[in-house]
Image (cartoon, each protein chain N blue to C red):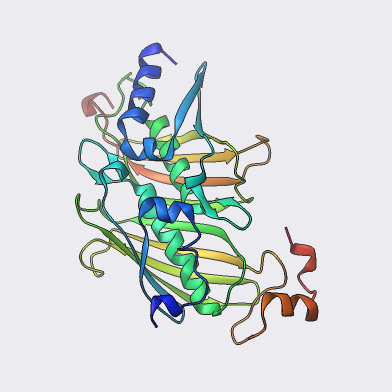
Length: 165
Length: 148
């Protein structure tokens, strides 16, 4: 699916993603691939020039969130519950970082996502992530296949009314 | 905390480009270090709420752990030879990060010869209402292994 036809993403409206130079490379249902460029100002260890773990964390979190949007297929409000990251190796200085996230399960209220970050080869990851997201944190939850807009769901269903922030 | 430790900690945060990118600095009081992430518009992840980017909170707490580790001491008195590297981190999001200053404190739960376990908690208006927590393991290299 062309990126500009994807459902609402956080890319255009997330200042931190803009600040890091994060771009969406491709999307498909439940899957998003993003990249962040190597930049000297994002280095975490000045002795080695390795990009900060925190940049990889943000890229993975962002990719996971976008994969959730791609699984739900429409704009909704989501909130990260937790994010576990395993760092396999240091990213190679000078190389851009990529992250591919797959939202493999969506329940009524929670979406589960796995993601991998790499610099050259997806089979030789820099880091892997596992995340869970609450869905519909502002208003009723969205569900796969539900074509109603959040406003239409809000009129027809109040099951989640007590959870609204 | 000795003046040398305080200097080392402040120098570490000033030396790390990404810590400067986020705007992190440290406030020292006695032997306690509080990391500060001043609010800045570029830290926002969701403009509709608005809320700080979840990745930024994770990154801030990870940097807080590294800063705390930069002044860690083994019983024999030596510290670490180089900056630790994260092995794994788990970030729990407890409340939305509002567009205000954020603080974090790290506790080193265990300092081994190869791995350190660190817990970090971040808060905004109230210390007893944390907005996020991080549990992580970090590879460490003692400055002088024959003493440990």
